[in-house]
Image 1: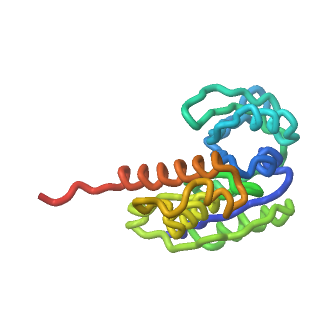
Image 2: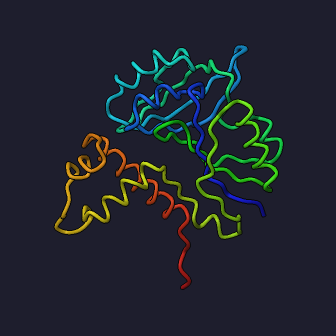
Length: 219
């Protein structure tokens, strides 16, 4: 059966950590990694509008090299980059213990991973690896895995959860609106573009999960 855990990881030498900390209003999603030409490379999605600022941060990021934008979409860009750090977000040894990664997405200080672990021993092994490298390890949520978990697989980052909560309780979604994006930006101390980006990403995540996990009604 196992468990589903949401874990926050933080260390200045984790891949892209300097870029993430310099751009807390931007969401980065780790897609996958490959080993090629004797080194490790990975692909990430960057959700934001100021790509020049992100790329400037990447250029000075000691954990990576040769960041290359391989595709650009509205509100999203995909990058390929070489990994120049020994710290792994989720180490391969954890995969051998049955740890499965649903999603890896940035938070303001590092990464948040949503994983499935077969037992608490596997989660403890992950925690011990992080402690051995002085990686801050925090379990935000731990729940028992059930056959119904596929009906609730949406995942919001802490930033997205915060912005939706603020927006909802401030009246942003009401008709007429009682709060604007500028109001939310002032409450959170971020730019209006960051507010817009976080709301769009959070709502898109919820919609995608709802549509993918919808069931055909009985007739």
